[in-house]
Image (tube, rainbow, N blue to C red; front, side):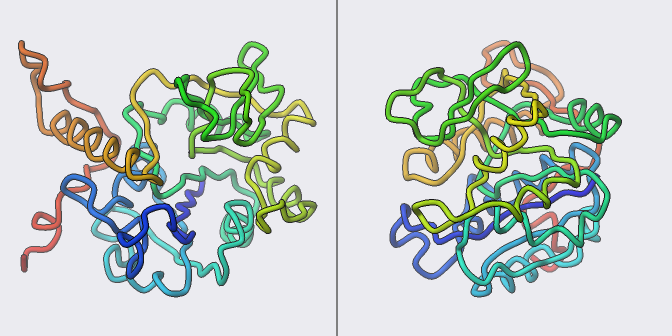
Length: 272
C-alpha cells in the first residue's frame, strides 16, 4: 500500500499564523503538525509516501523531512499548483500509486487510535474504499455519514441539519480505481474537486465501508481545533514515552508502533 499525505491548501481560517508559512508546518506541542499524520502512516507500516503541497511551501517540507531515510521510509514530493481541493491533490498521485491501494491522510489530522489492523485488512481485500468516522457533537463542520451496519450509504458535506453525528475524518483507504472516479468529477461551488464527491461515487457503487473511532481525533483547521490538536498531541507523546499507566491517570499508557516513533527535532538532528 502507498501512503499519500496531503499538505496543501491556503489555511485562511488561521489568519496571521499561516500568512508566511504552511499550516502543516506550525508547531503542535513538540513537533511540526505534519509529523503526527506522518506517524499515523508509519505506524501502519506504510513506508512509500507521497507528500503533496503547494509550490510556495513544498521546499519547506523537503527541507524538513528530506528523503525519508531518517524515518525508515521513502518520500516523494508533488506540487499542487493551485488550491483545487483534496480530490484534485489526490489525483496527482495516480502515477505514484499505479495499481496499488493507497492510504490518504490530511496533514492536519491527529488520531489517538491505531489504524494498522484496518489498513492490513484493506490491503488484503484490495478493492473498494474505507473511511474512518468519529461521533461528535458538532459534526456539521465536516462531511457527515449515514450507515447501514458498517456500510456507508450517504455522506453530506457540512450539512445545516446533519442526519447523524458521524463526522468523516481525514483518513481514507482507496483502491486504484479512485483515479477513474476523480477524472469524472466537476468542481463544486467552491471551485474545487471535493473528496466527498469521490466518496459518494464509491457509495453509489455499494463499495464503501467505515470504522468508528474509539479514541480522540481532531483536525487543526481552526483556532479551537488547533488548540485541541496541541492537547491531544501532548497526550499522545506522554503515552509514547510511558511504559506504565500511572495511578493518577495523567499518563495514558504506551502506544505500540510498527515503526520507530518520530522524535522531536533535537533527537532527529545531532547538530541541534
